Image (cartoon, rainbow, N blue to C red; front, side, top):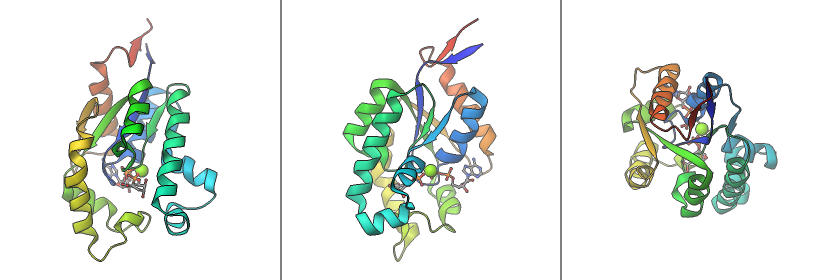
Length: 181
Ligand SMILES: Nc1ncnc2c1ncn2[C@@H]1O[C@H](COP(=O)(O)OP(=O)(O)O)[C@@H](O)[C@H]1O
Ligand SMILES: O=C(O)C1=C[C@@H](OP(=O)(O)O)[C@@H](O)[C@H](O)C1
Ligand SMILES: [Mg+2]
C-alpha cells in the first residue's frame, strides 16, 4: 500500500494535459483532485475569459497565487495548475515548500492540436494563436524545467497512460509515495 505524502502539482503549457491527466492521476492514487483554474472560476463566479476581460490578467494572477497557497497547504492531493502558474517565483516557492512539481512536457504540434478548437484560453485570442503558443512555449520551457520531475507526453499516448507515467516518475520519490505496508 502507498500513501501520498505530498501534493503532486502538475505544471506545463496549455494543452499539456494537466487537467485531464490530473483527474485520472487523482483517481488512481485515491486522493482528491484540485484544479487552480476551477477554484478561481468558482470563487469569481465567472469563466476564465470573463475574468481576463473584466478584471485583467494581473487580477487573475493574484487569485492564482492565493488559490495555490491555500491548496498546497491542505491535505495531500493532485493539483493541476494553469499554464502560467509556475512562472512566478512566489508560486514556485509555495509549491516547492509543500508539494512536488511535475512538468508535463509536450511538443508544440501536440499542444496546438489540443487547444486549437477551444476558445477558453484568453492568451490565445490573438491573430496568430499558433505563433503565440510557440513563443509562449519557447519563453516558458526553461522555467518549467525547474520542476522536480518531468514526464513526456506523446501525441498518441492516452490520458490514462500519461497518469501511469506520472506514477512511475513519482516512485523514485519515497517522500511522495510513502509505503504503508
Ligand atoms: N494524453 C492525452 N491524450 C489525448 N488527449 C489529451 C491528452 N491529454 C489531454 N488531452 C486533451 O487535450 C485537451 C487539453 O487538455 P487539458 O487537460 O485541458 O490541458 P491543460 O490543463 O494542460 O491545459 C483536452 O481536450 C484533453 O482531453
Ligand atoms: O498558460 C496560461 O497562462 C494560462 C493557462 C490556462 O490553464 P491551462 O494551462 O489549464 O489551459 C489558464 O490558467 C489561463 O487561460 C492562463
Ligand atoms: Mg487545465
